[in-house]
Length: 171
Image (cartoon, one colour):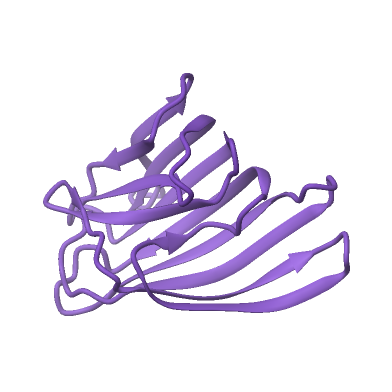
């Protein structure tokens, strides 16, 4: 009989922002797991525009090799718009000025050097008027490498002031 716990999610790393910091690093990605997921909850900063970089050998890759394609849904204006950004130095979790976002970022192929690493984001927060702002999309990290961590930060260079971050592994 199959073991139902064999594919259960396992918490790899966690971090709670309790003081103003430049970035959060979650590490411990290995070949033991085939898929990873990052939960980021209630992230705050001066002008929140939360993005991420994958780490290789413990160092964040800052090269312009992140491509994002997705859709943003803005309830205050009943607007849906496509978002495409190529050759950026980071992946996107959501757009600028989205307050108190909650997101899941699912990471695929992070340990396969014959494939690019892909990340799927699903994030929701509030716009400046208090209405829901939702981002759903995917990022291609155009580098055939082993990814062993992720750095999360504010694209504008402002510090993060609050947030809960969890890295989970799936077999």
